[in-house]
Image 1 (tube, rainbow, N blue to C red):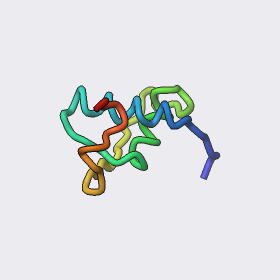
Image 2 (image 1 turned 90 degrees about the vertical axis):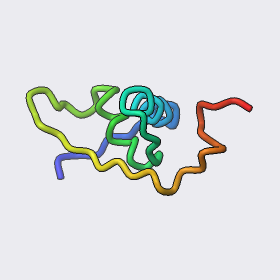
Image 3 (image 1 turned 120 degrees about the vertical axis):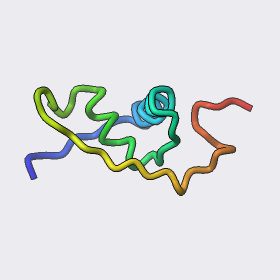
Image 4 (image 1 turned 30 degrees about the vertical axis):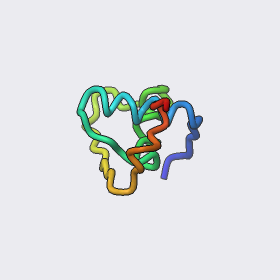
Length: 69
């Protein structure tokens, strides 16, 4: 391990939404953490091939964090 980074809940929600907008898949907040760190440039992936596992089986579709009722 090289280190630990943290991201805000707002960044996690933004990452979830961005993946929804681009890939049209709903992902769990826990797997959005890595993408949030990449979006915030806390992890340098320049010139690297990166894979992220994107599960979504435990997401309440009626309570998506960017949806308003």
